Amino acid sequence: MHLWLGLGAGLVVLVVALTGSIMVFQDELEPVLFSKTLKVEPGREKLPLDSLLKLAKQEFPKKKINQAKIFYDKSRSLIVTFGKKEEDADMKMVFIDPYTGRVLGKGDYNHQFFLVVKNLHRYLLAGETGKIITGLSCCIFIVLLISGMVLWWPVNKNAIKQRLRIKWKASAKRLNWDLHAVTGFYSSFFLLIISCTGLVWSYQWANNLIFQLADGKGPEKKKKVMNYTAVSGGRIKNVYETALLTTDSLYAFHGNTTITPPAGDSTAIAIVKDNITVAGEPPYLAWFDSKTGRYINHIPFTQYTTGLKIRKMILPIHTGSIYGWPTKLLALAVSLFAAALPVTGCILWLGKKRKKV
Image (tube, rainbow, N blue to C red; front, side, top):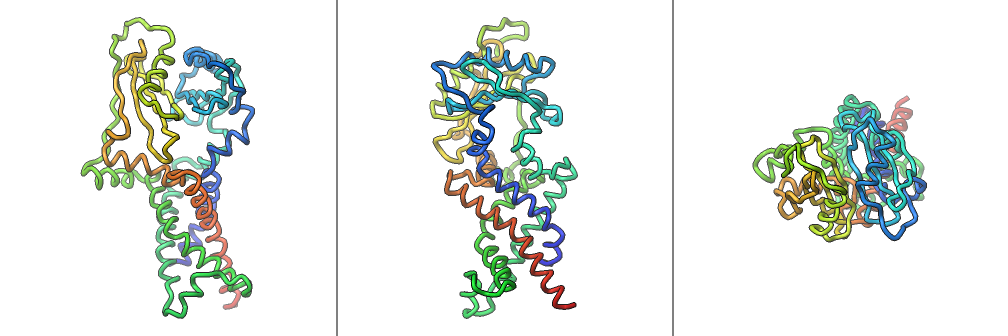
């Protein structure tokens, strides 16, 4: 079972593990690799957010703004995305210097390097078909990890030492076996966590199970937050800037902020702020009247249901960002080990096949 399942899912596991290892340090690598569009020279004061959004809108006047991301780092550009998430293939994005209003770059949302890597990681660049394949391969990989532990388990006390360390001076065949079995043993626990958390993006039942176990019921449907003012009400100047300043007063911690414009004329502005001072902490939410910028409601992390708290923690656990650099380095190491397992396993199989011939 371990052999044939491994051969069947090995290539997908290799691709998913390698792309996952690249994404571990996305936040650190992206500004370095794409500094022309993501880095700016900090000025004295940023332009009002409303003015910056208007400048971005001029680049794609026929498209609706989907989100705007503001970074706490003063040397980062403002990122504005356009289009609906259901129409991902046609989404656009604009990078703007928040101090001067200069457009640093623009392009297709899905053609950005790390978004391509993410698409490859989750969907193999094949949409829903790829999602089915990666989901099934994730389930198979969990079985492989468990069955691998059974095969690794020493038959007696004398065999324990040789199962816990790699003999670097052994023959090539024995070294390959050690690389497969020993690294597989040390990384299996962490890989099980990464694999199990990854199921929530492939299967709705896995996502619902978190809420059922924690809250005794499924996840609540997202409700539209409505404006205070009537649809025909007047609109003040710098609505988004007003909402942003209020958010910073509500959540005074340092963090990156994502603003989502209202879906309709009567719905509210949604703002999400991440607390970068606490590694792995889920985001905080707030809503504001889209006509006046008036505060409507907010939900800090402490008011989340138990199920929602756990669900919000899944991503930082899966990516290794839960405790910052230490867990990111751990996630990188085990992802590379996971990528090596199909390779060393295939070499073992080919060696046995030649021996039989």
